Length: 147
Image (cartoon, rainbow, N blue to C red; front, side, top):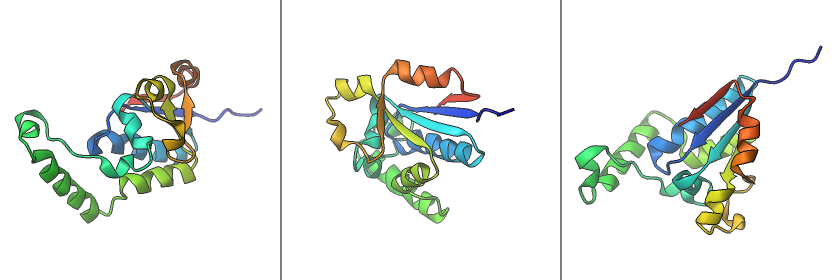
């Protein structure tokens, strides 16, 4: 009797450092556990799969601190130093690693259309799905998380 591979889906809707890392980390680890793993990028998260987008990700502190002019630049620099010190790969490196390990990166069709993004501007290997396409996959997932 053939056993079906477990599936995991992650939804990324933020283009910030703290918004993009969780889906990649979880997606990679799901794939390493033998699961079919996909990350669906929608709304601002779509910027993470536009070429060069992961390099532009910022860290924006919560609350009043995030509203202070220049604070996100300082906070982003501090966060990137912490990431480097902890030997954590960059977002661009994690995206490449994810794809090499079989994690499928998916752009939301509605968001691509709404933001008028030319599909040739997406990171190589990214596919475009409608919400219905994603839901057909997600309904059979053991794990389906917003990150």
